[in-house]
Amino acid sequence: MELKYNGKNVYREGVSAEEINLFCEGYKAFLDKGKTERQCAALAEKELEALGFKRYTGEKMIPGEKYYYIYKNKVVAAIAAGRKGIEEGISLIAAHIDSPRLDLKPNPVYEDSDICMIKTHYYGGVKKYQWTTVPLMLTGVIVKGNGEKVEVSIGGRDEDPVFYISDLLPHLASSQMDRKLKDGIKGEELNVIAGTVPYISDGEEIQKPVKENILHILNEMYGIIEEDLLTAELTFVPALRARDTGFDRSMVAAYGQDDKVCAYTSMKALEDIENPEKTCICIWADKEEIGSMGVTGMQSDFLVNFLGRMAESENVSLYDVLDNSVCLSADVDAAFDPTYRQVYDQNNSARLGGGIILTKYTGARGKSGTSDAACETAARVRKIFNDNGVVWQIGELGKVDEGGGGTVAQFIANRGIDTIDCGVGVISMHAPYEVTAKSDVYMAYRGYRAFFEAE
Ligand code: MN
Ligand code: MN
Image (cartoon, rainbow, N blue to C red; front, side):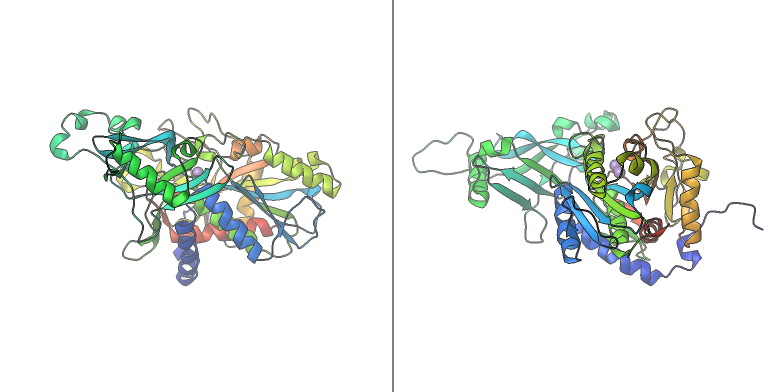
């Protein structure tokens, strides 16, 4: 009997590289299309419709049928109705589809020294210096004065222009180089360069002619005026495609893998299960990167409202549903990075290629701000993984007091649902271009699927 615990590697456990790579082709395609929560929700709606999921409207569910529900264009719930009643508990997986990015300020456009510039306000925890001198795309939604909605997307296609945030040339950066790294680029320096051509009108002197020209271009493209920008939801995200990484092509580099990696793999798992014992729900939430606040964040009542309506139509008690459900909070964890080994506790850090990660707690300063999963919950998931050949590892976000972080786990656990974090290891989390191991991505799918299929 082997008494020692030894970490595993997915490739050593007889998992086919072909299967791993094939799965990740779909993942990369998803990353290239879904950069924001709105885009991801729209993609999910299209795909789930095509797969025969029915739009959930609060009806009594038929066991074996699948449903989907889109909340305020930003949250997705996909449901596989189980053979057991939901009062016996639901198997939930919750991931988030928002990622760190640069939102436009409400009044974003200005002209300075014959350059049209756009002011941004970063969303989520970013290292600001990383967002300069990378190609950016503009995406989002504008609701015009008459209520008409316009979708904006510039920079995603090869023929599109991109946008750009400058940084100082090293030759003139001697005082900037003395700043602390966190102030290397300041929030008010994240200004996007958006145009240089002046608007020329016969005989008329135009104030801020470059800005005027950009407003004309925007008016031609989208029929909007500057006031429409004040209420718009526009954001800059990296205009970078998902790419295979390394000589062995074993990794994926892409924007927004936190947390589209868990979103994609958990939704694929829900799509692929058939006629489950328990009702399974995959949730894609918004606003995790800013504390899960707001109407589409996991701190909002939408989950309880949604489950409450479901309980009503099934004629069972919501209290029973909440009490008996189990949730995997599907979010990424920091994968051990040998270059920065000093911030990781090697025995308690996830490894690239080590499989899906179980994280019992997140938080900071003595586990503050975590749901701290019970050992019964952790052991239950561990057993499901072991029984189904899912390669898994344990993870913790770095050394004690080195920093910390949180996920949606605490907000779901606060509703009385047993919850544990379970996701994929990422290198350079929250950078414009993040890295995951394909074997871990595939193992996340296998793990989530085994969880949904468990009795
Ligand atoms: Mn996350
Ligand atoms: Mn994050």
